Amino acid sequence: MSLATLEDTKAPAPPTPWPPSPTLYEIDTWVWLSDLARKHGRPVDLGSVPRPEWDAIAEFGFDAVWLMGVWERSPAGIAIANENGGLIADFRRALPDFEIVDNVGSPYCIRNYEVDSHLGGTAGLASARKELAQRGIKLIVDFVPNHVAPDHTWTITHPEYFVQGTTQDALNNPDLFLVRNGNVFARGRDPNFPAWPDVLQLNAFHSGLRIAIVDTLRSIAGRADGVRCDMAMLPMTAIFERTWGSRAGEVPAHEYWRDVIGAVKAASPDFLFVGEAYWNLEWDLQQQGFDYCYDKKLYDLLEHSNAEAVRLHLCADLAYQKKLLRFIENHDEPRAASAFAGAKQRAAALTVATLPGIRMFHEGEFEGRTVRPPVFLGRRPEEPADEGLRRFYRKLLTAVNRPIFRIGDWALCERGGWPDNSTYQNIAAWHWTLEYERVLVVVNLSDSLSQAHVRVPWTGLSKETVKLRDRVNGVEYVRAGTEMDSPGLYVELAPWGFHFFEVRGSGNVQAS
Image 1: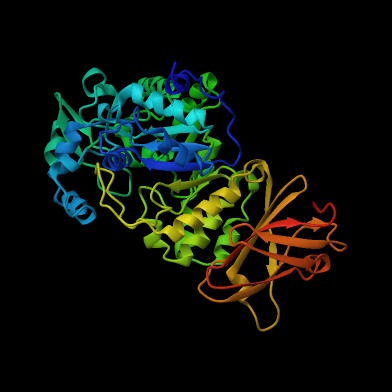
Image 2: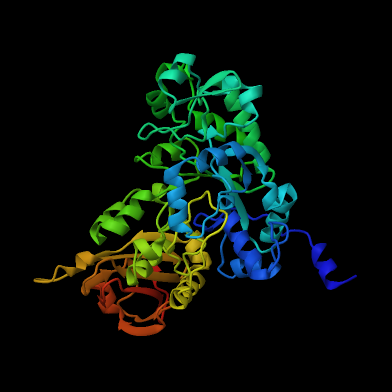
């Protein structure tokens, strides 16, 4: 028997529980496979990804991979998109040599919750999950609660699952209503924007739909370890009623997500629910069963605000903080190399990577890609990699690939200044502890040279000689414990500068 055959017979590693603060890597599946096909000179699907490619992902120490866009895409949705001049212009901006075949359809216009045949079908996803599991990595896929494609089978078999209108609605408002298979269906939407032209609106209040959704998610739970739920706020009772009013029918007794998540977790308690969340509804969604919700507010603060605003955001209750998902890039946002230029990207990435909750990174972020291809596209332009940025991310991800950042205790640090120097307000700091292991993170979230005294709540410092080893910048300092006690560790940081200190003393320094 060959070595390759022996490798094939290996059983997947036994499943491990989710750590409280995992790292997640989002991959635009169709685009990634297109790049791999070009790289290796042959077609590549999820079942034929070369093993070194999985190894390269595993080297970063991710706890999970989100394969974005694996489900069957809609020919009807593709046809609608090809008639949309605005979308075609977006496609050409991202991909100057765009051709119609490059529009493979939106991954959020789902025809069926089966893996798209182009990506390798059911067997391909199973193979990818096995490869990831052998490397200790879990798999997350998409779930879209609000809408489906206009050629989804439910439009024929269960039209009652949808918000519907009348023939007059379709005549008076064709942008909001679509005639399909003899029924008038509402197009999918959220309450703040025009309807999406390529999807039909599911009725979150319909009891039969909720049962079908639970069945769908139970099926997904047999093929993945969790779901990222698109626009998770939209089925919430208050939001859905405000959007659709009497068209949705009688308001149910229970919230959509309490019914759905409760039923799925009854059978698969470790199946993870991640909610894309906006409008300050993260806490509400957590209470309705979500394990984690997007922290879009942190993203906006890092991009547009200041360190004090970030610090105040991080003063929220720790139980809430631990159930947030942090990022500086995903498929909906501009590339980090565009939104957080230069050293600012490193400071923002370090911030996200060292906070509690899920830390999410996006394929292409490490290489400094600047083009964000619309999710409809099956390929993207070639871009040169920023090798310096890639080295930084490798150091950062290696530094946080330790138990202290997964299961340790996190807390903010106080920082202060002195008369005539208020630049300390540009600096934010926090620490992690796990038994006698300690890490201190200090970051200047401004474009100005800044100084501060950072106070750490660790006992037993006064008689210590403290060594501060910066794992990312590769420098080391020695300080007297009395300085760490009061007035606090003095730091001076260049614009967007930071320290990632492993803190070691001559004795047993403990968190107070």
